[in-house]
Length: 369
Ligand code: GLY
Image (cartoon, rainbow, N blue to C red; front, side, top):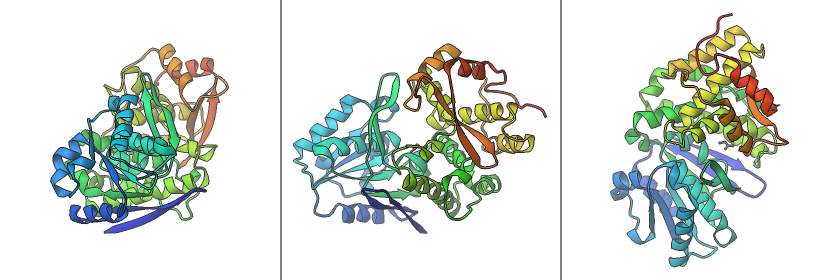
């Protein structure tokens, strides 16, 4: 099965293929899409170890990047740029990112800055990067304590999503991707996709097949998420407004990831804790009804997610949130649910955020009506 979606921003139009094609076919597609171009292929170490023999890349054109968020740093960025220069890549040439979000983000950033911008292709290999980071052109590297603080908006030439990679993705990483998938269920009404997808219902009813990685269901699920994401990016590539809805659950998530130095939670887990928190808060403050609140918590729990019991210092969380790219005028931005499948942005002062975090039940426990 194969689905093709497209992104159309002011500067670029490109397609996103979602398939369960053979690796042979994927190899062919990468070769076709880079024909006549010199290429630098940045590949995750894990993916290299598992799949190198499936592709006919030459060792010379490869840059193998160790796995982990800590690798998304300026030293590796400079190494990639140096390698591109050694290989003699020119403005007409191309980079290819094969791996999860770290590889995609750093390669995209390198491609966007090398000679003021050359082509790149995204081949995401984790569920998280398939449903989010490989699409939409956000590229970045981190500084210690500040995730994605250096980056660009720079769209790839193409995205090839092949779900066969998910067969070797470990359970924790697969669930992490599902955290990002669940996010889309809560924002569908904001995205402006032309027809209703009923993603919330699809994820509620389809949980067993999804958890078993049933291929057709997984392709459909990715397609639905990307229908929503592409609709948002087509309207607001540079996050002037609407694109912020994609950050549902992310304000607290980024703070939790930073406070634990990216070692304790995967990104998707942190997003799920962020969603539990904000759903609880929205119900408590009467933004959503009790029935939607219960359904929402049950949806997260269907996938085995539970609220977070660990408590971190509110002062430290707020210090981190104040540095978030989404913060402005000294205020911290939260995306909160306001009705079924719909969210809105609220901006809170650090004092208001303090009370929000202090507000009891913050990461845990179901509230009663
Ligand atoms: N990951 C959120 C976005 O692409 O805007």
